[in-house]
Image (cartoon, rainbow, N blue to C red):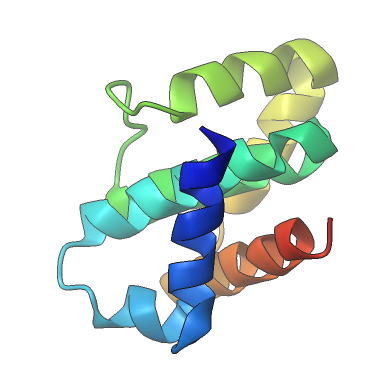
Length: 116
């Protein structure tokens, strides 16, 4: 599974910035899906970076995607690791971001993954 994520990250960063790629998509739900996937990628770094990303994906999409392949499991793991109050606060930080700030957070998170 990691190989698939590596390929996706390489494709996103190879010829265009993530922000440019996400901004070019007309389907906002797909942007939310990418943010959810990035939250799954940063999960090994701890729950702190994942929770705001999940909130940002919720804001971009307008709803938490219970059918996501990544988001429910990441949410559960982050909530268990942080506790309810800390998770809710971190998630809310992501919810308060506008679209551009959500994309910027996602781009910074991709850079974090690439530095591993």
